[in-house]
Amino acid sequence: AEDISPCPRGMYRATGAGYRQGECLWCPRGRYGSSQGLTSSACTAKCPTGRYNDRLGARTVDDCKFCMAGRYGSQEGLTTKDCSGWCPAGK
Image 1: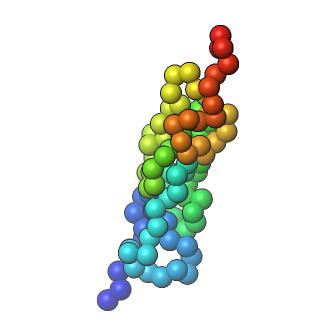
Image 2 (image 1 turned 120 degrees about the vertical axis):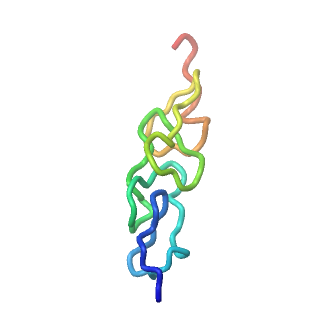
């Protein structure tokens, strides 16, 4: 019997890609997958502005870390702790 369970949170399987859980792929960096059965690498959403995710398979928005003090994040879906760069002097 095939294992036809949906992919767990933090993973996705493209529509029509098969049915085994072993075919699930991790949600990419900068995104998270908060529900089961996701069917696209877009997963649930990008990490919000001001946060980043440098690991595969994030499950909730809380897995998106805040940019470090002195750095800022000006767009969604950032993938490194460098975020968008250093804050200007005096800001």
